[in-house]
Image (cartoon, rainbow over all chains, first blue to last red; front, side, top):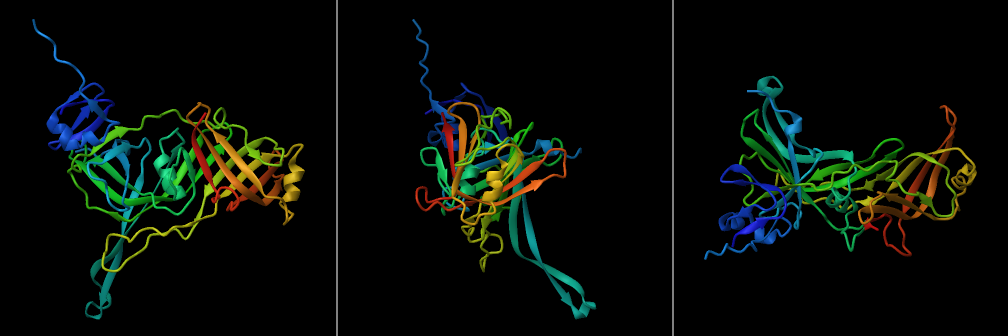
Length: 54
Length: 315
């Protein structure tokens, strides 16, 4: 499940340094790769709701 | 290609659950001060009469990992290192010296030249085996840690799988002015201090070499804490009591308290519950008459079962 960065942090993604800033959406694949589910100080659940269309 | 500057180093650390083993998907904290690590091979040299007594081959007996770090004390930034230094565990924001292992993995990373590949050096099982906090009037509060590690790795250009890096959050440097509270020696009225140094000394804290593994130590021996406090105090109305106490083998045990910090819920209080003077010399060689106090922190068997107690997040 995608998450939202809570603080600024960096990580190597596919061999390249990537900066995540507070509020950035993090894809499910990256969440799994970085083990973010076990790092609640870095990322939280994506609680945003999709925009409704009429 | 241009050589790289030391200020381009990324020095990061993460606490280990098992000494010598970097946690999986580690959550590193970037240190604002460099963690200066060295992994020094112990070279074995083979000399031969066939070569007229000169060296013909070398081997590595083992690799010793040591280091140091120092800088201005900042709220919370070095709490993992204090835990390691005290061989203890933060328990509801109180840390007493004990005999448990608290180790860290340190990773230093730097580009191989300007625009070069980021290259990482890793050190496992690192402990702060000694250190100090120094309070100097009209200056900052500084800390220093001596480090010893269990092992090290060859350089790598690959990040540890799932590694993340977060900058330390606290940045405000602690000052020896507003951030030093009322220093107390129980039972004594104190004159003004010019400076003080708390030396977190340990006896017998060293890496355990083991057979059959060249590059990894078996662990670090638990040391006996022998903290020593030195202070340089202006000679004023109250100097005689400490002068005489230091000459009296039976002078009463007393506690020493250093309140550090000025921000509520972030402050530290460093207490040595049971102390005795080991020196109190007078110095008339400089402009001001000074008293050089030396204090040994003793093991408090009555209350704390420790000789050093650090409390954080003090209100």
